[in-house]
Image (cartoon, helix red, strand yellow):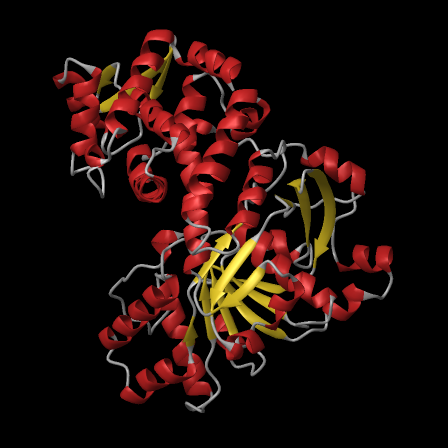
Amino acid sequence: MTQILNKEYVLNQTGSGVYEKSFNFPEKILQFGTGVLLRGLVDYLVDKANRKSFFEGRIVVVKSTDGGTSEFTEQDNLFTTHIKGVAQGEIVDKLLINSSISRVLQSNAEWEAVLDAVHQPSLQIIISNTTEVGIQYVAEKISGGTPASYPGKLLSVLWERYEYFQGNPDTGFVIVPTELVVDNGILLKDIVLKLAAYNEMPAAFIKWLHTENHFCNSLVDRIVPGKPRNLAEQEQKVGYTDKLWIEVEPFLLWAIEGDDYIRSVLSFYRGDERMMIKPSITPFREQKLRILNGSHTVSVPLAYLSGLNTVAECMEDDYMNHFFREVILQEILPTIEESCPLAPAFAKDVLDRFANPFIAHKLISITFQESAKMNARNVRTLVRYFDKYKKLPEHMCLGFAAMLLFLKPTRIEGGKYYGSRGTEEYVITDDNAGIFAEHWNNHTSIQQLVEHVCADERLWESDLATIPGFTAIVSSHLEALQQEGVKQFMDLMKQKK
């Protein structure tokens, strides 16, 4: 009979140490979501802090999606976290068994149990990851069953807490959404208050919402691929089966806006210096947007058109490795290091993450909404760089030219725009594809095309055509990429670098 990962197995293997102790910790967190990001980041940090006796609390998880919770109950809510990747230039390969979850409740079938959970005084924290669409206002009544939306569920939980403790002070929650939305805490609070008004809830409760509950903006960053492709092989090595096994990269970041009170409640932050509670998380958001996301956006069209398919392949290619390093360290980093003091260390971490051989991050998926991402992530960097140095960032200009070539349609059919790299077609998944098709069709010269694209106010937050020399260098690169072919152009650049 195959051994299943469960309490009995863990205790037999490890003795009575840290695991037996952790099974008796009180429930301190209510977590909305069973997804791999929460398990690979939040639950990982709680488990790590528990091992160091910094928190000594467990997590009640609410599963909002359809389907049962048997995968969790069969394993006594234990799961394997496999840390795989590159950190400080070295390969990391480490296994941990996470015991932070006490139970998992299905929201539709066990809503009363969810409400009963908030009767515990020890429960002081609510964490969520319901995807970006989860933090949206839905006009619904919260009485008479399980609310449909996450804000509805949250309001119902808060009302239950308020009524059970009769509105006593110090019975509110620290509420930390991890959805990838700017100012997610502020947004969630506004929606909950709007929903409370829709439900005509009493003024005393509204006041309690304001004074006794703390909605914190937060930013999370960790790649969690989930189950490995070779799970059966991994299970054979460890000697047990685990349906909840997840892989994670070594890097993680969780930045939360808060003060000393928030630190006292979220005491598990002490278990890992990469979880930070600061007065403002704007610098963390800025460095992620510019360095990680921005370098992806400006580099990927060139790499994809040259025949590469994943970020890891880029880091194995001499020229693209050089390109990423120049863009990140020499062109993006200098524009934000004064406002983001941790950006230099973050930049080095990003290069390690890109080189992770265990994650197949497809370039074509990164090109989704390429032009909008270029505007949001890189236009301001281009302007900042020119303002600082009175010259243009050479590699970012080349990346911009490659984007224009990537967005050049070779075929339009059924409302879809198709581009090509050699004999291979790809779908251009960009809401602005029609605008770029219009420019490619209406201009006879590359110089004219680039000038009109750069001046198109539908596309950019700044008029790029007014940056001295920008349209000229982009036009020169675009002509070279078209005439020589991207792969041949890159081969020439390899010889020059």
